[in-house]
Image 1 (cartoon, rainbow, N blue to C red):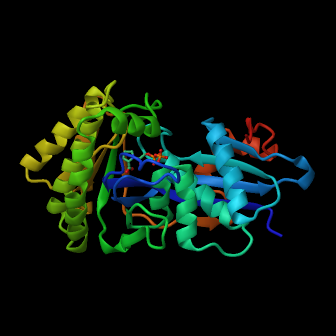
Image 2 (tube, protein in one colour):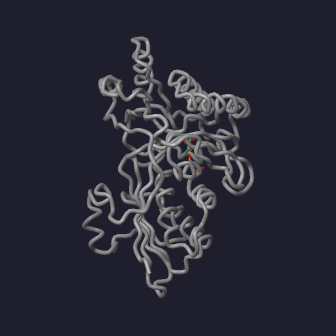
Image 3 (tube, helix red, strand yellow):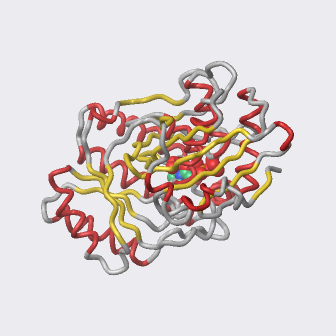
Length: 347
Ligand code: 2P0
C-alpha cells in the first residue's frame, strides 16, 4: 500500500480573469476565465498516511500559511475520495506565496493530485478539477496544462484545455515588485468587489467578448491580438476592484513603472504585453526570441526585485522523488525528522 505521495503542479496566469464568485454554495465563478499554465512556477504537495489511531490530519504550509483552510480542504477531499486514514500533508512552493502569483492555485492542484493517488477508485479529471476548486477557485485551471478555460457549472467539461502547451511556445516573464503577502486576499477582494463596486456587472458583461477574442487569438497564435485583450481584461479587473468600497489597490509604484516599460518596448517595436493579477507582480508575454531583451528591460525598472522566466506548462503529476526546491530552505532537515515540525491540526 502506498504510504507517501509527492505531487507537483504549475501555477497559472489568467488572460481572461476570474474576479467574482457566483452567489450560493459550491465556489462557482460568476464568469468564465481562461488561463495559461506556467511551467516551473510550481508547488509541491507531500501526503503521507498516518496510523489510524493518530486520529486527526496534520497539515502545514512551508513556509507557514493558512492551515485552517488547508485542514478543511483535506477533510473535505478525504470524504470525497474515500481516504479513511488520517494524513500528514505539507505544501510548499518555489515562488513568492500569496503575493499575486497564484500560489494557492498550484498548491491546491498539487495537493488534489497527491490525494487522488490515495483515493479509492480512479476519480475522473472533471471530478478532480471540481475538487481542486474547493481549495482555491483558480486551482481547477492548474489541473490541466497549456491554455485552460473554466466556466461556471459542475457538469463534465466545466474545465477544459483549449490548447496544449506545445501549441504555442510563448515566453512569460514575471517582474516581481514586492515579496510580502498581499494586503487583501483574493477571496475577500472578490467578495468586496461584488458587494460594492458599481462596475461589477459591466465587468462580467465585458468578459464574454474577451473570452471569444482570446480563444481566437490562441487558435491562430496571434500574439498582438492575445496581448491586447489580456491587457484590457486585466486593467478592467483592476478598475472594477478600485471601484469597491473600501477600494482595492493591489499595485505598487513599480507595478505601474513596469506597465509603462512594456508599453515603451512596444513603441520600440517589441511585441510584449502585460497582465496583472490580484497583487503587485506583472506578468509579460512575448516571443521566446525577445525574452532576453524584454527580461533585461524589466529588470532595469526601479523597484523590480527579480524577473522569473516561464513558458506554457504541463499538467500536475505525481513524482517519485520530491523536487530539489521542495527540500531547500530547511524543509529537508525537517523532513528527516518526519515532519515533527508540522504546525497545524485539521479543524
Ligand atoms: C484569476 N485570481 O483568474 C484571478 C485573477 C486573482 C486575480 O483566481 O476565493 O485563489 O479561492 O476562488 O482562485 C485568485 O483567486 O480565489 C484568482 P478563490 P482564488 O487567476
